[in-house]
Image 1 (cartoon, rainbow, N blue to C red):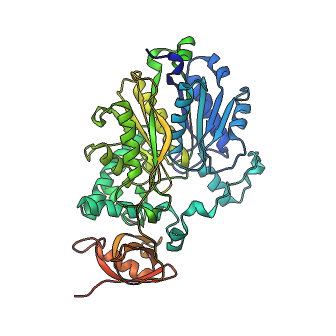
Image 2 (image 1 turned 90 degrees about the horizontal axis):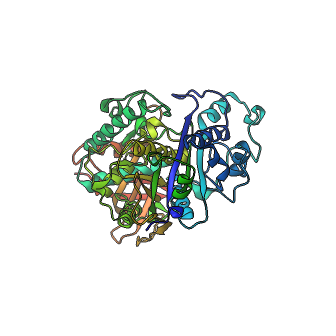
Image 3 (image 1 turned 90 degrees about the vertical axis):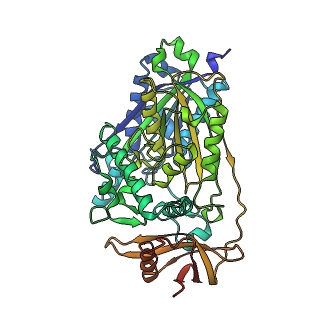
Length: 503
């Protein structure tokens, strides 16, 4: 017999967009947008009295502006009593799913009755203000402490990654994509076509979503073809296959116990049951991973969540994948055993709906809640953080799980058995994965290579323009890949010279 006081349900959701298509509506700070989304979510509950019962506020880390105490500032904006529990997450796109899972655990454990989960960004406005030389503080933005958050050098990656220039997602995720393609036995053309078909479908979803940053529908050809309006960033991803972080968006979710929802007269068809979820973490150092073509953490998180729920992936009616780059939804499709033509999004994804940095998945949770209210079956929402490092999934449904809340919010830490990273190497090595970064002139500028020696040691680095052009050219001639080839590599302080065998 389930105890309604220990069963978590989502009873209110809200998400907002300020401006559209790269044009911010006005100089509104993230707190303004988050407050609006929170008020929308509270109103969506349909019961005014529930506001006074909020005893926890959890905020996803905001990157476009810094706040010492975002939950406290929000509570003041909403005229709420100081919540018993307040938290702000670290950086990471997995946190909306992970925090929702923690909220479910708190309600199931009797530590919370009504929780508010929020997140949002005003990166489009912040960028516009910076370009105009306008200080946001002069417009009344919060000064507690204010300004863009400080970042630690370790946030960029391990020392080995920094030495190799692998310090931004646009360079790292293509390494995963290219190895995934190689391991799958496909060609670059086949992989790019899959990405283009999927993201074209995403753009159609985004065009119908009122909270979306863009409303343009792109054909697969539009997405796959690099050119002046869709420049190649790092192979194989032109601009439309990269996340769009320059958005002004926020979202909020209200979760309470089933007992409290019933006490306040919330209708059954307005409640979405938070079954729970699971998370896992791969080594933070990308160069220490066992594989570049798979995500052990994603496979583990998905497997644990489904096993806890005694649910087959085929029973899922709705799936939303984190989609900062195509390899992430592709890996989720493989982890779930779904067909390649699956469209794993409800919002339209990062490139078209918008990628408000850490809080994208909160928008997905809001939209999935609406889908379930409309009659959809069990749903899985996926969050991804770091360089495919942190994975968390949550399961939502219109009916309670027979065991109530079945989540395990603490992630499982996965290890690796990778050999040492070698520097200053000069000799033969097999390329494990690679990508080429292009300049804004459309010309290959820098190659990034991860390789291993015959005795299993790894090396990584960046090349100059000449070798970048050579690496790019090899993807256009049979066997259309440099991955798996043995080359001569000379490493001088992270700058590689790569020589292919002749003849």
